[in-house]
Image 1 (cartoon, helix red, strand yellow):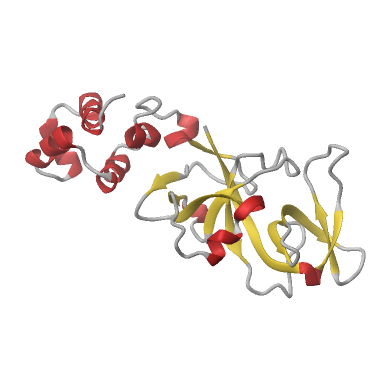
Image 2 (spheres, one colour):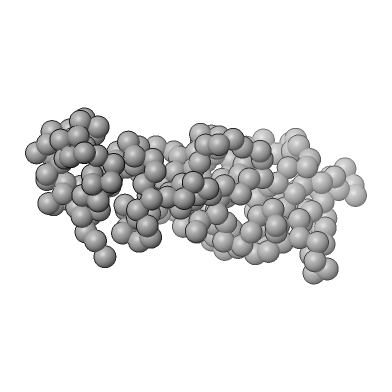
Length: 228
């Protein structure tokens, strides 16, 4: 596997006429570029390179895995699988801005994020459409397929006021008995309940009634991304 400096050298060879040309585009001195090539650069510098050369595969630059150039349909090895309609902008791994991504499953141990301030995010996901989210985390389970797939990453926005929840939206719910589920919210059979509606039409998945009083914490699922 190539070193960090060798990967930077590959970018220079592919996109620039010379190190001096690369230095101008990066707004750095030629000596600084030489130091990057010989010693490596660090995550902040790599992130700056990605901002200047968006066709570079972020995973390759950061880890050395994969190919140097990202595919058009999945810039930086991430492609959007939307719940909501979106435009041409693609989500990007970032280390200085965006929304924190925690490598935990919502269904499994999501409360760790809420209660343990020692847990740090793996990185940030910079995606302007969902940069108002509180965090990103993993999805396990198949009840919301094909809308949300097992292994996807979801953007969550915590809802503080549970007195009115718009129906028809997808929510991530933590109940008072510590059940965690992701479902579309429908009207309940009574005024003080909701119907949890799965997207998967297989016989083993069916709508369930949930009393409103059992909702301890609830997040709106703003969007989801799939990693390759």
